Amino acid sequence: MALVAIDGPGGSGKSTVAAALAKRLGWERLDTGAMYRAVALLALRHQVGVFDGPALAGLARAMELDVGERIVLDGEDVTTEIRSEAVDAVVSPISAHPAVRAELVARQRAWAAEHQTAVVEGRDIGSVVLPDAVLKVYLDAHPEVRAARRAGQRETALDAALSAALARRDAADSTREHAPLHVAADALLIDSSELGVEEVVERLLAALEERGVRP
Image 1 (cartoon, rainbow, N blue to C red):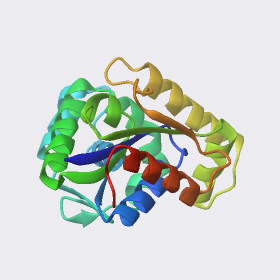
Image 2: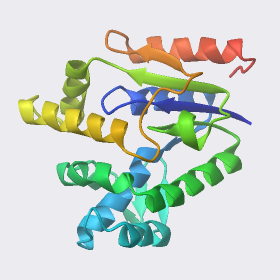
Image 3: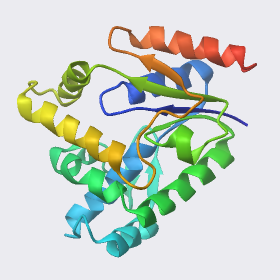
C-alpha cells in the first residue's frame, strides 16, 4: 500500500496539487472535504441544524456518495452546489461532530484500503485518517494568498468578507475538539505561497522517490 496524505487549510492548493500529483502518478484521488460538504448540503436541504449531531450523523450514514471527478450525492451531481457559500457557512461546525467524522473516516479508510495506491486530501488525513501513509504533506500559504485563490475558484472579487470567512474556518478547524487541523509530526511542510503547482508536485515526487516509491 502506498498512500499520500495531503492536509492543509482552505486555499492552500490541496485539491489542485492532489489532482496534479495523482495524474502524474496514475493513481486515484479522494477529496475528503467533498464528503463533509455533501453532509452539509444535505443538512441545508433537510433543514437540520448545525448542532444536531445525531441527525447529522444519520444523514451521513444514509447518504449514497460517489466522490471522483464529479461528486454524486444520492444519484445527483452536486459538484458545483457543494462549493456554494451556503455550504461554506455550515460545513465547519457540521464536520466537527464526532459521529459525523466517525462515519466519514470509516468510509475514507475503506476507500483507501480498496485502492491501495492513492492521493487523499483533507484536513486530518495524515494525523487521523491515514497515519501510516507513505508520505504526509501539510500544504500551507499566506492568508492573503489563500483568500485570493479562493476568490479565483469562485470567479468572484476578493473582499474582506471572504478573507474573514476563511479566517473563521481556519480558527474553527484548528481548535475543534475532535481531529483538529494541525501538522502531523512527520509531515513534509510546504509553503505554496510563491510556488506553482508543478513545483510543488516535483517536490512531492522527489519525496516519494526518497521513500522508494516511483511512478
